[in-house]
Image (cartoon, rainbow, N blue to C red; front, side):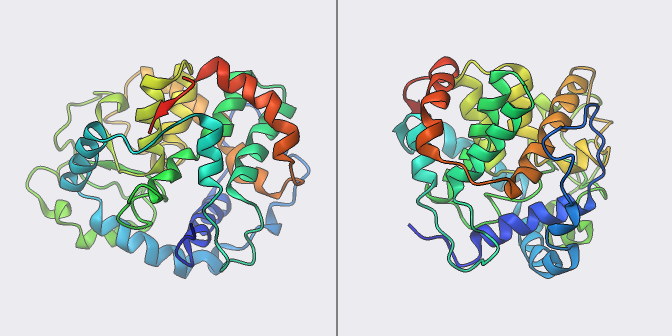
Length: 294
């Protein structure tokens, strides 16, 4: 199946903006990217127009009503039954011919992320988290409403939209921005209720998190890496401290340790899925159900 002409281009442009905006804030600098020239990634300005148009749509449509509908739909329906490697191969059928800068297949990006983590001697649960972290993009094959509910930075819905979210002015067209409850600081939440108790904007991270939470033996840190790695307003910009609690501090450290592997491993040398499959098949067997309900 082919994606809309700019699916991978949008996803990559979002990553590029995050790369160029980012400041390394994790405690232990990853070894794998120490010698890389980050200026070789495409510049912020080149991605800006495409990203602005994407976020304009996302920010107008990610409402509380939409997010509740998506979660109800997820609980009521099983979209497919298959193992993790089969899901990776299914994701790999998404092809984008329009973006000359996107030469990696979906499965190659997952393997590059996992291999970068492996080379740095990180634990096997973190390696396999890198392997699966983008599998939520299967949402596109399962009938998403567009790109805006699959990729992009995530944020809290149900309370005032933070000014730390990228392009915050584009929320002006979202009806929740003027709702009597949803537009207040705490909205539907209690002070310091913890991120486990808030609703993040729907997309591939949130979808995969809810699947892996009940169908894997991944540790809490891995689940945090999956759920929060696109939650830039929190883990990079420091927003939502009025909602977080002590339990979120550990999650924050985990996400900051993971994100450079996701963002910067795309420039690594090519990988051979056939060669690497036996190693990762062992990790998949260790941490996941043989068949997962997607």
